[in-house]
Image (cartoon, rainbow, N blue to C red; front, side):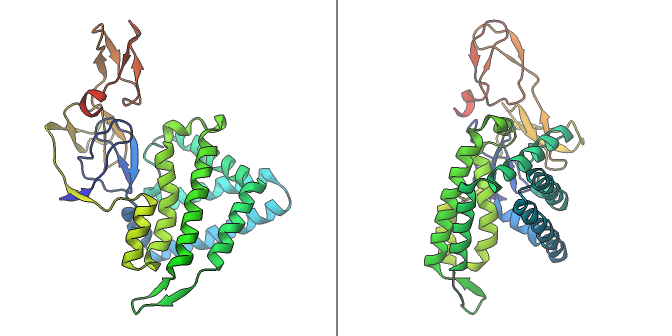
Length: 306
């Protein structure tokens, strides 16, 4: 079968196993590495009733948030933001980043979502950005091409360019804030950026002509290149969590299970490249790790793809 072409942002390994969710996990180091927005769109379109109910609940929460903002009540606003993100991920669990794989990480992630949303919501700079985005969106014009309503290109790409640049600026500020340091491990900046952009893509893609779709996908950094799965040497094993069958490529340290969406450690120790001593494989195998005995830095997966 064919899958979209993805390369791990941490270890450089290709995607070799089939995936069933919008989030792409590396088959060698277990890193959360990319997004397939088309699967995200499929999940959204699975149930029109669910989508409608979600939108209604979201609007009600947003109305309460607006009231809290007008009263200058940051604590109430933050609490409502946390309620919203919790509702969002419980309604659409397929959108939950697979790196958020236990209750503690989920709690920390919701805290970051609520805190950062509140910080941006009350910051005049981001309020100005939001007003400009709304102005550009209100200026859009539409037409019917016989297949449905389409948005006029010039205005749309003006909006898209502004949104992408605004999001890049937001990501830079967000990931430089020590309050959100946990996010470097939970969702890498490059992938988080794609998560934000993918939501924008999913909303607007149906309103674009084929030519504009291609231009927009290239502009937003989403691949439409499909490749045949080339399964390297390896073996079958079972997920340590749900016991489903998984394929383990030779040289891998963590493999993501598409049945329960958790990672399985397939190697527990590694030998130091300098002294040969056995060390425990770290939680994030793509990161450099110093030998516990001689202190030499080891890169576990670089030898394969670095």
